[in-house]
Length: 116
Length: 118
Image 1 (cartoon, rainbow over the protein chains, first blue to last red):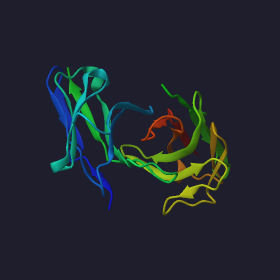
Image 2 (cartoon, each protein chain N blue to C red; image 1 turned 135 degrees about the vertical axis):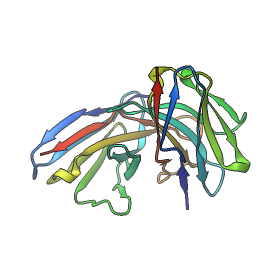
Image 3 (cartoon, each protein chain N blue to C red; image 1 turned 180 degrees about the horizontal axis):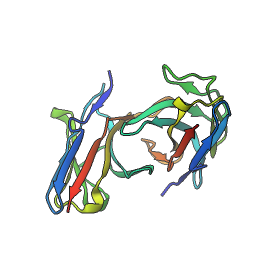
Image 4 (tube, each protein chain N blue to C red; image 1 turned 45 degrees about the horizontal axis):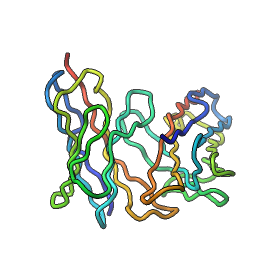
């Protein structure tokens, strides 16, 4: 079965500290991978995505993610967290071959709190 | 980048009434649109996949007569919550897939609609 797991429901870090949010997936083949961020009451904003090529992907707001095929993981990192990074983060996977019925599967999300 | 809008952003209605939510792709054409539901502190749950000019495909457990989806054009899909009840209160998010460009086709998300049923 296709699934996405984010082992950490909630993480608290101090401002300026480094951050790593974990994501593991179960999929029939290597999927198309995403990280989204959602502020309270808002829609989703795409942070970064991976389809192919360099397994270290750079995104917006200083975030990066590394795809590790052997571990079926796509962990999100940021070297120095800012207070404005406090939000909900969702890892998602989608099929590489797109048909009308293909869909993106979301993980349960990780809530990030930042201590000033 | 591609922009998806939703209207209204917030709606409050009485129990038993119907509510229509619009999802528009503003600067691209979308053959496929997706409707998600999100409860507080939870992830997005796909409700249905809407294809332009054809019937929507609903996920297991989603009542198609309760949540009517119409995808009449390449830029507009609507979700109508019929005979709404308090348990239908939720955050509804749509997404649209651009049909142009190379594979894979990325989904772009709308800002969401907060539905409160009294």
